[in-house]
Image 1 (tube, rainbow over the protein chains, first blue to last red):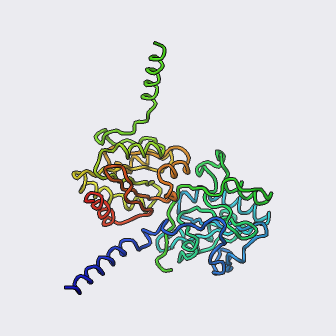
Image 2 (image 1 turned 90 degrees about the vertical axis):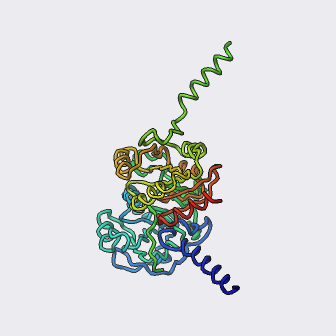
Image 3 (image 1 turned 180 degrees about the vertical axis):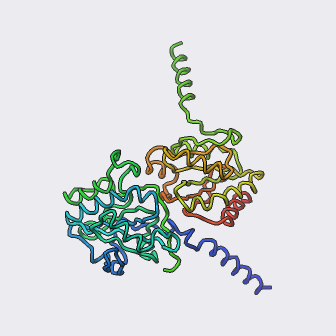
Length: 211
Length: 168
């Protein structure tokens, strides 16, 4: 009888765990990196559309490091991608390290295959690495949940801003709060970033079940 | 007399400006612009045993994929007091697409279309929500949030969580 009860409890626990594990339930499960912390998994090599391998450590800039989780497939990310390109290119020239990470599993989103990433980077004229994190390992380490999602680190390598690019995905000319540019400019001028964390709607990162 | 007039006018203004928050389900398919406060009010005034709130968008593939499961569980549990509140995050110029999709899924009751800035909407509806779509909340008859998750899920999970609120 006791053995039966132990088995029943074990089965119930296993069933409970089973309902909560899986890439479809994972979006947002990991809490995002806290302000003031350093970038995790800084030494993982990631293949970029320029054919080279990069790590988060290797792209660090003197003024800080801008890491954006984005992708090809999310319409929300697509609305912002021109701004990602222009901000990334502009602030790389101003001394920031810039990298855009696609953590979608290409098995779940064919538009996020590597060849498609190469084409998109060329179209957008990215002058910074656009890397594939196809096992979603980096996204998990950051607690990134959606695309696009920004993590901006200061010159000391501490997370200084997290969240949205700005407050208007559909119209760049109607932006009222340019969160990311304001944060970047604050770091340049040595002033405090007024808005350090923001949110926006977006597609959940299509996590791979491989990592 | 003036005081009563002011009160009366205030009542008129407030009544006229209040958003149509609590349209009955038999009011037919509609897509009502809604702030986070509007949706919270709809939840509070749902008068149902279980309220399932789902944030979705036509451009969100996982949202579209799980939608039939939500409609299926609604069919199964509505007699037991399950009410659905759908909130579309489509842009205003996509509202026709949203309506067409809702109709194709058999939705025949009022639903909502997010209005205003994303961050205000997200944080008002739930500060624990990162903004990922889809997102689902389940409330009990007293308006207490009992379950919340982000991302697509299975019909089995929808049913499990609904039954949990119905029976506890």
